[in-house]
Image (cartoon, rainbow over the protein chains, first blue to last red):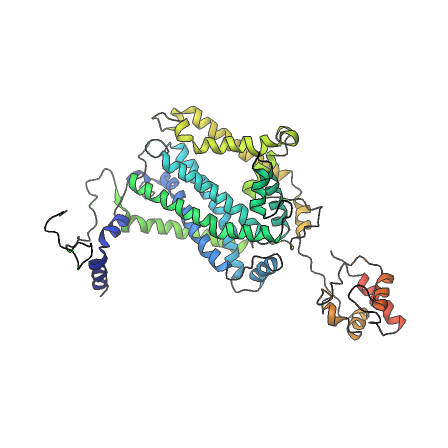
Length: 224
Length: 253
Protein backbone atom coordinates (compact mmCIF):
# COMPACT_ATOMS: atom_id res chain seq x y z
CA UNK A 1 0.00 0.00 0.00
CA UNK A 2 2.71 2.44 1.09
CA UNK A 3 4.88 1.26 -1.81
CA UNK A 4 1.98 1.86 -4.22
CA UNK A 5 1.47 5.37 -2.90
CA UNK A 6 5.20 6.03 -3.25
CA UNK A 7 5.19 4.71 -6.81
CA UNK A 8 2.17 6.81 -7.69
CA UNK A 9 3.88 10.01 -6.50
CA UNK A 10 7.25 8.94 -7.96
CA UNK A 11 5.76 8.36 -11.41
CA UNK A 12 4.42 11.90 -11.46
CA UNK A 13 7.22 13.79 -9.66
CA UNK A 14 10.33 11.58 -9.95
CA UNK A 15 11.14 11.86 -6.23
CA UNK A 16 13.57 8.92 -6.05
CA UNK A 17 16.65 10.97 -7.04
CA UNK A 18 15.79 13.58 -4.38
CA UNK A 19 15.28 10.94 -1.73
CA UNK A 20 18.55 9.15 -2.64
CA UNK A 21 20.38 12.49 -2.48
CA UNK A 22 19.25 12.91 1.10
CA UNK A 23 19.68 9.30 2.24
CA UNK A 24 22.83 8.22 0.39
CA UNK A 25 26.00 9.52 1.84
CA UNK A 26 28.79 7.71 3.51
CA UNK A 27 29.82 8.19 7.14
CA UNK A 28 33.59 7.65 7.33
CA UNK A 29 35.07 5.72 10.21
CA UNK A 30 36.89 8.70 11.77
CA UNK A 31 33.65 10.63 12.48
CA UNK A 32 31.72 7.66 13.88
CA UNK A 33 31.67 7.56 17.70
CA UNK A 34 30.71 3.89 17.51
CA UNK A 35 34.26 3.16 16.27
CA UNK A 36 36.30 5.93 17.91
CA UNK A 37 34.85 7.44 21.05
CA UNK A 38 36.79 10.70 20.54
CA UNK A 39 34.65 11.24 17.44
CA UNK A 40 31.91 12.57 19.75
CA UNK A 41 33.32 16.01 18.89
CA UNK A 42 31.57 15.58 15.54
CA UNK A 43 28.20 15.53 17.36
CA UNK A 44 28.25 19.22 18.29
CA UNK A 45 27.05 20.48 14.91
CA UNK A 46 24.18 18.01 14.80
CA UNK A 47 23.18 18.86 18.37
CA UNK A 48 23.18 22.56 17.48
CA UNK A 49 20.71 21.77 14.70
CA UNK A 50 18.65 19.60 17.08
CA UNK A 51 18.34 22.44 19.62
CA UNK A 52 17.51 24.88 16.83
CA UNK A 53 14.58 22.66 15.84
CA UNK A 54 13.44 22.56 19.48
CA UNK A 55 13.77 26.36 19.67
CA UNK A 56 11.57 26.78 16.60
CA UNK A 57 8.94 24.38 17.92
CA UNK A 58 8.88 25.76 21.49
CA UNK A 59 8.86 29.30 20.08
CA UNK A 60 5.82 28.46 17.97
CA UNK A 61 3.98 27.29 21.08
CA UNK A 62 5.08 30.33 23.10
CA UNK A 63 3.69 32.61 20.39
CA UNK A 64 0.23 31.13 21.01
CA UNK A 65 0.13 33.04 24.32
CA UNK A 66 2.71 35.79 24.06
CA UNK A 67 1.45 39.32 23.31
CA UNK A 68 4.14 41.76 22.09
CA UNK A 69 3.01 45.02 23.67
CA UNK A 70 4.25 46.72 26.81
CA UNK A 71 0.93 46.39 28.67
CA UNK A 72 0.43 42.67 28.11
CA UNK A 73 3.86 41.21 27.33
CA UNK A 74 4.87 40.70 30.95
CA UNK A 75 1.40 39.52 32.00
CA UNK A 76 1.26 37.01 29.13
CA UNK A 77 4.66 35.57 30.07
CA UNK A 78 3.65 35.45 33.74
CA UNK A 79 0.43 33.67 32.80
CA UNK A 80 2.32 31.29 30.53
CA UNK A 81 4.76 30.51 33.31
CA UNK A 82 2.24 30.07 36.12
CA UNK A 83 -1.16 29.16 34.67
CA UNK A 84 -0.86 27.48 31.28
CA UNK A 85 -0.58 23.68 31.34
CA UNK A 86 3.10 22.78 30.69
CA UNK A 87 3.76 26.47 30.02
CA UNK A 88 6.66 26.40 32.46
CA UNK A 89 8.19 23.47 30.54
CA UNK A 90 7.78 25.08 27.12
CA UNK A 91 9.18 28.40 28.29
CA UNK A 92 11.92 26.55 30.17
CA UNK A 93 12.94 24.66 27.06
CA UNK A 94 13.07 27.88 25.04
CA UNK A 95 15.03 29.65 27.79
CA UNK A 96 17.59 26.90 28.39
CA UNK A 97 17.74 25.99 24.71
CA UNK A 98 18.90 29.53 23.98
CA UNK A 99 21.91 28.95 26.23
CA UNK A 100 22.56 25.38 25.12
CA UNK A 101 22.52 26.32 21.44
CA UNK A 102 25.24 28.90 22.09
CA UNK A 103 27.31 26.31 23.98
CA UNK A 104 26.94 23.65 21.28
CA UNK A 105 27.61 26.09 18.46
CA UNK A 106 30.70 27.34 20.29
CA UNK A 107 32.01 23.79 20.71
CA UNK A 108 31.26 23.03 17.04
CA UNK A 109 33.17 26.17 16.00
CA UNK A 110 36.15 25.17 18.15
CA UNK A 111 36.14 21.63 16.72
CA UNK A 112 36.18 22.96 13.16
CA UNK A 113 38.81 25.56 14.03
CA UNK A 114 41.28 23.32 15.83
CA UNK A 115 40.96 20.63 13.17
CA UNK A 116 41.67 23.18 10.46
CA UNK A 117 38.54 21.96 8.71
CA UNK A 118 37.87 25.45 7.33
CA UNK A 119 40.76 25.22 4.88
CA UNK A 120 40.45 24.84 1.14
CA UNK A 121 37.94 23.84 -0.21
CA UNK A 122 35.66 24.59 2.78
CA UNK A 123 36.28 28.36 3.21
CA UNK A 124 32.77 29.39 2.18
CA UNK A 125 31.13 26.98 4.57
CA UNK A 126 33.20 28.45 7.42
CA UNK A 127 32.10 31.97 6.49
CA UNK A 128 28.44 30.91 6.44
CA UNK A 129 28.97 29.21 9.81
CA UNK A 130 30.39 32.39 11.38
CA UNK A 131 27.38 34.27 10.00
CA UNK A 132 25.07 31.72 11.65
CA UNK A 133 26.95 32.41 14.90
CA UNK A 134 26.20 36.12 14.52
CA UNK A 135 22.51 35.47 13.79
CA UNK A 136 22.25 33.25 16.88
CA UNK A 137 23.73 35.98 19.09
CA UNK A 138 21.22 38.39 17.56
CA UNK A 139 18.40 35.98 18.40
CA UNK A 140 19.67 35.77 21.96
CA UNK A 141 19.87 39.56 22.29
CA UNK A 142 16.41 40.27 20.84
CA UNK A 143 14.73 37.38 22.67
CA UNK A 144 16.06 38.61 26.01
CA UNK A 145 13.83 41.72 25.86
CA UNK A 146 10.57 39.94 25.07
CA UNK A 147 9.46 38.93 28.63
CA UNK A 148 9.56 42.67 29.43
CA UNK A 149 10.78 42.21 32.98
CA UNK A 150 13.42 44.31 34.73
CA UNK A 151 16.51 42.44 33.51
CA UNK A 152 15.15 42.41 29.96
CA UNK A 153 14.56 46.15 29.77
CA UNK A 154 17.83 47.20 31.37
CA UNK A 155 20.04 44.75 29.48
CA UNK A 156 18.50 46.01 26.24
CA UNK A 157 19.11 49.60 27.32
CA UNK A 158 22.81 48.84 27.73
CA UNK A 159 22.93 46.94 24.43
CA UNK A 160 21.35 49.80 22.53
CA UNK A 161 23.70 52.30 24.16
CA UNK A 162 26.57 50.19 22.85
CA UNK A 163 25.01 50.17 19.37
CA UNK A 164 24.85 53.96 19.58
CA UNK A 165 28.63 54.27 19.99
CA UNK A 166 29.25 52.91 16.48
CA UNK A 167 30.82 55.75 14.48
CA UNK A 168 28.65 57.55 11.87
CA UNK A 169 25.75 55.07 11.68
CA UNK A 170 25.42 54.54 15.48
CA UNK A 171 22.44 56.83 16.21
CA UNK A 172 20.62 55.70 13.04
CA UNK A 173 21.25 52.06 13.97
CA UNK A 174 19.84 52.62 17.43
CA UNK A 175 16.74 54.33 16.03
CA UNK A 176 16.28 51.45 13.58
CA UNK A 177 16.38 48.89 16.39
CA UNK A 178 14.55 50.83 19.11
CA UNK A 179 12.02 52.68 16.95
CA UNK A 180 12.97 55.98 18.57
CA UNK A 181 16.13 57.99 19.17
CA UNK A 182 15.67 58.14 22.96
CA UNK A 183 12.70 56.07 24.15
CA UNK A 184 13.00 52.36 24.75
CA UNK A 185 9.39 51.30 24.94
CA UNK A 186 6.43 50.04 22.97
CA UNK A 187 8.12 50.45 19.57
CA UNK A 188 11.28 48.74 20.75
CA UNK A 189 9.36 45.72 21.98
CA UNK A 190 7.42 45.26 18.73
CA UNK A 191 10.58 45.71 16.66
CA UNK A 192 12.55 43.22 18.73
CA UNK A 193 9.62 40.83 18.46
CA UNK A 194 9.55 41.16 14.68
CA UNK A 195 13.33 40.74 14.45
CA UNK A 196 13.30 37.76 16.80
CA UNK A 197 10.37 35.96 15.19
CA UNK A 198 10.60 36.85 11.48
CA UNK A 199 13.81 38.52 10.32
CA UNK A 200 16.49 36.51 12.10
CA UNK A 201 14.81 33.06 11.85
CA UNK A 202 14.37 33.70 8.12
CA UNK A 203 18.07 34.52 7.78
CA UNK A 204 18.95 31.55 9.98
CA UNK A 205 17.01 29.05 7.88
CA UNK A 206 18.58 30.36 4.68
CA UNK A 207 22.11 30.21 6.10
CA UNK A 208 21.58 26.76 7.61
CA UNK A 209 20.26 25.50 4.29
CA UNK A 210 23.42 26.78 2.59
CA UNK A 211 25.56 25.26 5.37
CA UNK A 212 24.00 21.80 4.87
CA UNK A 213 24.03 21.87 1.08
CA UNK A 214 27.74 22.73 1.15
CA UNK A 215 28.66 20.01 3.64
CA UNK A 216 26.69 17.45 1.63
CA UNK A 217 28.32 18.56 -1.60
CA UNK A 218 31.88 18.55 -0.25
CA UNK A 219 31.62 15.76 2.29
CA UNK A 220 33.02 15.95 5.79
CA UNK A 221 36.72 16.83 6.18
CA UNK A 222 39.11 13.89 6.27
CA UNK A 223 40.99 12.56 9.30
CA UNK A 224 43.87 14.67 10.62
CA UNK B 1 21.22 8.27 -18.45
CA UNK B 2 19.23 8.38 -21.61
CA UNK B 3 19.28 11.78 -23.30
CA UNK B 4 17.81 13.40 -26.37
CA UNK B 5 16.07 11.46 -29.13
CA UNK B 6 13.81 8.66 -28.08
CA UNK B 7 13.21 9.92 -24.54
CA UNK B 8 9.75 9.21 -23.20
CA UNK B 9 7.95 11.42 -20.70
CA UNK B 10 4.99 11.06 -18.35
CA UNK B 11 2.14 12.77 -20.23
CA UNK B 12 3.10 16.24 -21.41
CA UNK B 13 5.38 16.78 -18.37
CA UNK B 14 9.17 16.85 -18.18
CA UNK B 15 9.26 13.79 -15.91
CA UNK B 16 11.03 10.92 -17.72
CA UNK B 17 8.83 7.85 -18.13
CA UNK B 18 11.73 5.55 -17.18
CA UNK B 19 11.78 5.00 -13.39
CA UNK B 20 15.04 5.11 -11.44
CA UNK B 21 15.48 2.20 -9.06
CA UNK B 22 15.29 3.14 -5.36
CA UNK B 23 18.28 1.20 -4.04
CA UNK B 24 20.88 2.34 -1.48
CA UNK B 25 24.48 2.89 -2.50
CA UNK B 26 26.99 0.21 -1.65
CA UNK B 27 29.73 1.33 0.73
CA UNK B 28 31.54 -2.02 1.09
CA UNK B 29 34.46 -0.83 -1.03
CA UNK B 30 34.95 2.40 0.95
CA UNK B 31 38.00 2.71 3.22
CA UNK B 32 37.83 1.65 6.88
CA UNK B 33 34.55 1.04 8.59
CA UNK B 34 32.56 3.47 6.47
CA UNK B 35 28.84 3.01 6.89
CA UNK B 36 25.68 4.34 5.31
CA UNK B 37 24.05 7.44 6.76
CA UNK B 38 20.58 6.01 6.18
CA UNK B 39 19.48 4.17 8.21
CA UNK B 40 22.47 2.87 10.23
CA UNK B 41 24.13 6.10 11.29
CA UNK B 42 20.95 8.15 11.63
CA UNK B 43 19.73 5.70 14.27
CA UNK B 44 22.94 6.28 16.26
CA UNK B 45 22.52 10.03 15.90
CA UNK B 46 18.99 9.70 17.29
CA UNK B 47 20.29 7.75 20.28
CA UNK B 48 22.77 10.53 21.04
CA UNK B 49 19.96 13.03 20.53
CA UNK B 50 17.65 11.23 23.00
CA UNK B 51 20.30 11.12 25.70
CA UNK B 52 20.94 14.82 25.14
CA UNK B 53 17.19 15.53 25.24
CA UNK B 54 16.84 13.79 28.60
CA UNK B 55 19.58 15.96 30.10
CA UNK B 56 18.01 19.04 28.55
CA UNK B 57 14.58 18.21 30.00
CA UNK B 58 16.05 17.53 33.45
CA UNK B 59 17.70 20.96 33.35
CA UNK B 60 14.38 22.52 32.32
CA UNK B 61 12.42 20.84 35.10
CA UNK B 62 15.02 21.42 37.84
CA UNK B 63 15.67 25.07 37.03
CA UNK B 64 12.55 27.05 36.29
CA UNK B 65 13.32 29.81 33.79
CA UNK B 66 13.70 33.12 35.62
CA UNK B 67 11.19 35.93 35.47
CA UNK B 68 11.71 39.19 37.31
CA UNK B 69 9.14 41.86 38.08
CA UNK B 70 7.57 43.84 35.27
CA UNK B 71 9.85 46.35 33.55
CA UNK B 72 9.80 49.73 35.26
CA UNK B 73 11.75 52.29 33.20
CA UNK B 74 11.67 54.81 36.06
CA UNK B 75 13.74 52.61 38.37
CA UNK B 76 17.15 54.25 37.97
CA UNK B 77 18.83 52.17 40.67
CA UNK B 78 18.57 48.86 38.80
CA UNK B 79 21.97 47.37 37.94
CA UNK B 80 21.68 45.81 34.48
CA UNK B 81 23.20 42.48 33.49
CA UNK B 82 23.07 40.83 30.06
CA UNK B 83 22.63 37.10 29.46
CA UNK B 84 25.72 35.07 30.41
CA UNK B 85 27.17 34.73 26.91
CA UNK B 86 27.46 38.52 26.59
CA UNK B 87 29.09 38.94 30.00
CA UNK B 88 32.66 39.03 28.63
CA UNK B 89 31.81 41.97 26.38
CA UNK B 90 30.07 43.72 29.24
CA UNK B 91 33.10 43.18 31.49
CA UNK B 92 35.48 44.43 28.80
CA UNK B 93 33.73 47.82 28.88
CA UNK B 94 34.63 48.25 32.56
CA UNK B 95 38.36 48.53 31.89
CA UNK B 96 40.10 51.88 31.61
CA UNK B 97 41.24 51.56 28.02
CA UNK B 98 37.91 50.21 26.84
CA UNK B 99 35.68 52.79 28.52
CA UNK B 100 35.26 56.55 28.84
CA UNK B 101 37.16 58.25 26.02
CA UNK B 102 38.22 54.85 24.74
CA UNK B 103 34.71 53.32 24.62
CA UNK B 104 35.11 52.77 20.91
CA UNK B 105 37.98 50.36 21.57
CA UNK B 106 35.77 48.26 23.83
CA UNK B 107 32.60 48.38 21.79
CA UNK B 108 33.91 48.36 18.22
CA UNK B 109 37.63 47.82 17.73
CA UNK B 110 38.23 44.73 19.84
CA UNK B 111 34.98 42.82 19.11
CA UNK B 112 35.26 43.91 15.46
CA UNK B 113 38.81 42.61 15.13
CA UNK B 114 37.94 39.33 16.85
CA UNK B 115 34.82 38.68 14.80
CA UNK B 116 36.51 39.81 11.59
CA UNK B 117 39.48 37.53 12.21
CA UNK B 118 37.13 34.62 12.90
CA UNK B 119 35.18 35.31 9.72
CA UNK B 120 38.33 35.58 7.61
CA UNK B 121 40.21 32.71 9.30
CA UNK B 122 40.50 30.63 6.08
CA UNK B 123 42.37 33.51 4.40
CA UNK B 124 44.51 34.42 7.41
CA UNK B 125 45.63 30.83 7.93
CA UNK B 126 46.27 29.64 4.38
CA UNK B 127 48.83 26.89 4.85
CA UNK B 128 47.91 23.34 3.94
CA UNK B 129 48.57 22.02 7.47
CA UNK B 130 45.52 21.06 9.50
CA UNK B 131 47.00 19.75 12.76
CA UNK B 132 46.78 22.38 15.55
CA UNK B 133 50.47 21.94 16.53
CA UNK B 134 51.59 22.53 12.94
CA UNK B 135 49.94 25.97 12.81
CA UNK B 136 51.01 27.55 16.12
CA UNK B 137 49.91 31.11 15.28
CA UNK B 138 46.29 30.21 14.59
CA UNK B 139 46.09 27.81 17.51
CA UNK B 140 47.83 30.25 19.86
CA UNK B 141 45.58 33.17 18.96
CA UNK B 142 42.45 31.05 19.40
CA UNK B 143 43.64 29.79 22.79
CA UNK B 144 44.43 33.36 23.82
CA UNK B 145 40.96 34.50 22.73
CA UNK B 146 39.38 31.58 24.58
CA UNK B 147 41.35 32.34 27.74
CA UNK B 148 40.36 36.03 27.63
CA UNK B 149 36.67 35.23 27.12
CA UNK B 150 36.72 32.80 30.03
CA UNK B 151 38.69 35.22 32.23
CA UNK B 152 36.39 38.18 31.43
CA UNK B 153 33.26 36.12 32.05
CA UNK B 154 34.71 34.92 35.35
CA UNK B 155 35.63 38.45 36.43
CA UNK B 156 32.17 39.68 35.54
CA UNK B 157 30.53 36.93 37.58
CA UNK B 158 32.63 37.39 40.73
CA UNK B 159 32.26 41.18 40.63
CA UNK B 160 28.48 41.15 40.33
CA UNK B 161 26.42 41.53 43.48
CA UNK B 162 24.18 38.50 42.99
CA UNK B 163 22.24 38.95 46.23
CA UNK B 164 21.36 42.50 45.35
CA UNK B 165 20.53 41.43 41.80
CA UNK B 166 18.09 38.88 43.16
CA UNK B 167 16.49 41.46 45.45
CA UNK B 168 16.17 44.18 42.82
CA UNK B 169 14.37 41.95 40.37
CA UNK B 170 12.02 40.15 42.74
CA UNK B 171 8.34 39.97 41.91
CA UNK B 172 6.54 41.93 44.63
CA UNK B 173 3.46 40.30 46.05
CA UNK B 174 1.79 42.37 48.73
CA UNK B 175 -0.37 40.31 51.01
CA UNK B 176 -3.51 42.13 51.95
CA UNK B 177 -4.86 41.33 55.40
CA UNK B 178 -8.53 41.10 54.55
CA UNK B 179 -9.47 40.65 58.23
CA UNK B 180 -7.99 43.99 59.26
CA UNK B 181 -10.53 46.57 60.47
CA UNK B 182 -9.13 48.99 57.88
CA UNK B 183 -9.97 46.54 55.09
CA UNK B 184 -13.53 46.13 56.44
CA UNK B 185 -13.98 49.91 56.23
CA UNK B 186 -12.44 49.84 52.74
CA UNK B 187 -15.13 47.35 51.72
CA UNK B 188 -18.01 49.07 53.48
CA UNK B 189 -17.21 52.52 52.11
CA UNK B 190 -17.28 51.15 48.51
CA UNK B 191 -13.63 52.13 47.84
CA UNK B 192 -13.36 48.56 46.60
CA UNK B 193 -15.51 49.40 43.56
CA UNK B 194 -12.78 51.50 41.95
CA UNK B 195 -9.57 50.44 43.68
CA UNK B 196 -10.12 46.66 43.51
CA UNK B 197 -10.33 43.83 46.01
CA UNK B 198 -6.53 43.67 46.34
CA UNK B 199 -6.16 47.46 46.32
CA UNK B 200 -4.15 47.00 43.13
CA UNK B 201 -6.36 49.39 41.19
CA UNK B 202 -9.28 49.17 38.78
CA UNK B 203 -10.90 52.23 37.32
CA UNK B 204 -9.04 54.02 40.14
CA UNK B 205 -5.27 53.76 40.72
CA UNK B 206 -3.46 51.21 42.89
CA UNK B 207 -3.33 52.08 46.59
CA UNK B 208 -0.23 49.98 47.31
CA UNK B 209 2.91 51.94 48.10
CA UNK B 210 1.38 55.35 47.46
CA UNK B 211 4.02 57.03 49.65
CA UNK B 212 1.30 59.20 51.22
CA UNK B 213 0.86 59.71 54.94
CA UNK B 214 -2.33 58.65 56.75
CA UNK B 215 -3.45 62.29 57.01
CA UNK B 216 -3.06 62.85 53.28
CA UNK B 217 -5.02 59.69 52.52
CA UNK B 218 -7.77 60.71 54.91
CA UNK B 219 -7.92 64.07 53.18
CA UNK B 220 -8.28 62.43 49.74
CA UNK B 221 -11.00 60.09 51.02
CA UNK B 222 -12.91 63.14 52.26
CA UNK B 223 -12.22 65.71 49.56
CA UNK B 224 -11.26 63.68 46.51
CA UNK B 225 -8.36 64.21 44.13
CA UNK B 226 -8.00 64.22 40.34
CA UNK B 227 -10.85 62.18 38.87
CA UNK B 228 -12.02 61.06 42.32
CA UNK B 229 -14.95 63.16 43.54
CA UNK B 230 -15.26 64.53 47.05
CA UNK B 231 -17.35 63.04 49.86
CA UNK B 232 -16.75 59.42 48.90
CA UNK B 233 -16.17 58.59 52.54
CA UNK B 234 -19.32 58.64 54.65
CA UNK B 235 -18.22 56.84 57.82
CA UNK B 236 -17.21 58.00 61.30
CA UNK B 237 -13.89 59.76 62.03
CA UNK B 238 -12.84 56.55 63.86
CA UNK B 239 -13.36 54.51 60.66
CA UNK B 240 -11.58 57.13 58.59
CA UNK B 241 -8.54 56.79 60.85
CA UNK B 242 -8.57 52.98 60.51
CA UNK B 243 -8.89 53.19 56.73
CA UNK B 244 -6.18 55.78 56.16
CA UNK B 245 -3.71 54.05 58.46
CA UNK B 246 -4.40 50.73 56.75
CA UNK B 247 -3.73 52.14 53.28
CA UNK B 248 -0.68 54.14 54.38
CA UNK B 249 0.75 50.90 55.80
CA UNK B 250 0.68 49.10 52.45
CA UNK B 251 4.19 49.29 51.15
CA UNK B 252 5.95 47.78 48.21
CA UNK B 253 8.49 45.36 49.57
